[in-house]
Structures are given as C-alpha cells and as structure tokens.
Image (cartoon, rainbow, N blue to C red; front, side, top):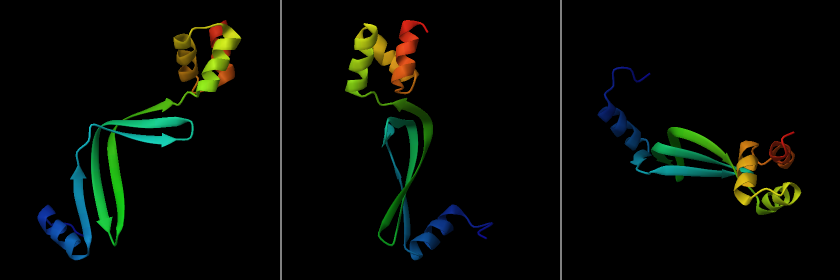
Amino acid sequence: MFQGMNPRQMQRMMEQMGVKTQEIKAERVIIEKEGSQIIITDPQIIETSMKGQRSFNISGNIEEKALIKEDDLKLVMEKTGASREKAEQALAEFNGDIAGAIMKIQGA
C-alpha cells in the first residue's frame, strides 16, 4: 500500500490523519499481572496517539517473575523450617506454587 514511500513522507501523512507517534526512552518496563510481573529490559517503546487514544508498542528483553505473597512465604517457612531465602527461591522456581515449593525443600 505504501511501498516506495520514504519514512518522512509516511510521518507527514500520518500527522495529517491525526496520528502522532513518538519514541519513549526508558531503562525498563514492568507490567504487573495477577500473580506475576513481566519485566522488559532495554525496551524500545513507541507511543501512538490518535483521536485522544494512546497506545504503546513495547519490545525488548522479556523476563517473567512470579510475585510471592508474604502469607505464602510464611506458610512454606512454617511447614518446612526453611529460611526465608530458601523459601523465596523455591516459590520463585515453582511460580508461587506452595505445594511444589514445599516438596522441593523437603526433597520429595
């Protein structure tokens, strides 16, 4: 459709249609989900504004981490006698799965 059009012409045409884009500089982006976080490092972020709506296109190095609830951590420590650090590691390895963390610590 826009084959052969240079990027500058494309930008002008988008602005005429009311579409504005800009690059956003950031060191990392964190998206919080229920039970986990998506962490994007070295992100490339493009913000697009059109008719009052803003959207973001983000790419980069992606890592997902389980969010460990304090109650879950205490329960694993109580049931296994493990240190806080060991319980956190086990819960992280099993993405917050309490039973899996307990079994790992107990060697099952």
